[in-house]
Length: 170
Image (cartoon, rainbow, N blue to C red; front, side):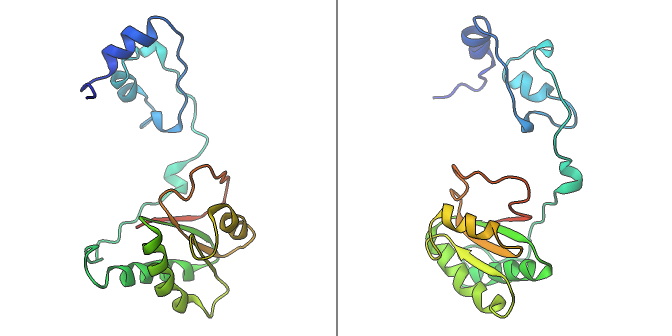
């Protein structure tokens, strides 16, 4: 069982006997780390906020496709493939699509490939086009590529800078 609040436990068993330095981009929300610090039992003087390296508000955009049928619907993967193909056709970019399984990768691949076959877009799918490292390296050499990978695709991969411009989570 996990306690409802780990703050007292961390204060007693960690902070009282050690100096702790916590580093993470996601610790700060709207310029303050107070929420996370309170949840972890850190007092205000324990927190130093440095400027963010990335301007997420200017560089990121989250879009939700609200018109897709439920995952159990027979047309679900076809409709998701339509969204992926439409995004791929917008302009040359590298896109990473994370799906729940190798089976869904294969299904999406079958639906996406005919929609982009006549374009200069490389479509790579984990379990279809090779392993994670191989297809990430192939995509990095392309200006316009779509990778279909499982949720574990990026585990232990070093993806830096502009490795992908668009990420889709299925």
